[in-house]
Length: 343
Ligand code: PBG
Image (cartoon, rainbow, N blue to C red; front, side):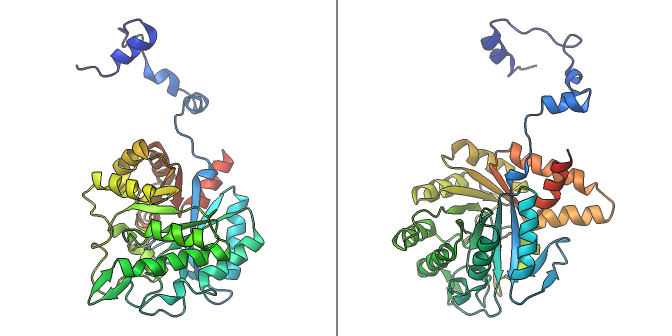
């Protein structure tokens, strides 16, 4: 049998490790819950989580998302109740997605001073100043065509979209967002946002870049939640090809060079290898987005009694942290935080 571990052991102890079964018994440290806990390599804590929310116009509004049990579109007053609950569970941060009343060709609602996200940020920061508010910066929820940039002749224009994306980021920061998180995947958007923030008096606002964001079918339920499905075509001309891993390192490098303070890999589960590689190389903190489709699969199978939903949820969250995530964006945040609080 080839042996990859023994040379290391030899270096550490100076003694060639020859022992095996029956003197070595791995099961010794698995005997009781306390022993297992003592030697556990990865520990989840509520401060690992960032909770996503969908905010919509009106008051007293809660619209459940059918493909995401437990998740609803919320008006600002309802959102405030939920964010208070998240904060009391020890969850340090939320990320906001806006659903505007009106959409147009250029996504005006994304950078309107009184846009839905801008108002929600102000309300949350008033009610719970210590809760970190991250805003997703993108145009797709605000454009009539549902793409993440400006469209001309059926094509999503890169450079022309940058100014609008940067404007959206600055307006979020002006409303009080603690962190802005661009998810559009236009080239050069981190630099454009950084410069808009710096010249707009927001040099202290960090950028969390969705650096390695794949064109993924795992976003299906999100598009129901955020009403942001593209009206023609798909996002493959700007989001990454799911078959590529080395390319993710280039994306991360470019975003860090452009000034990203943190980067993200998205989705998480089908891309844990990418997460691991990015974590090994990244000089900045690395997040992972446990996306809507990953959540929906767990909920659907659990509803049918085919899996133990809570146990699978914890196993998945551990796997994401074990693969290198410094923080995890997840719709499971509160459910998991509650379980961790009981322990
Ligand atoms: C917006 C955006 C998307 C998600 C986060 N920001 C959807 C998309 O790119 O189509 C997906 C999140 C999820 O599925 O939970 N661009």
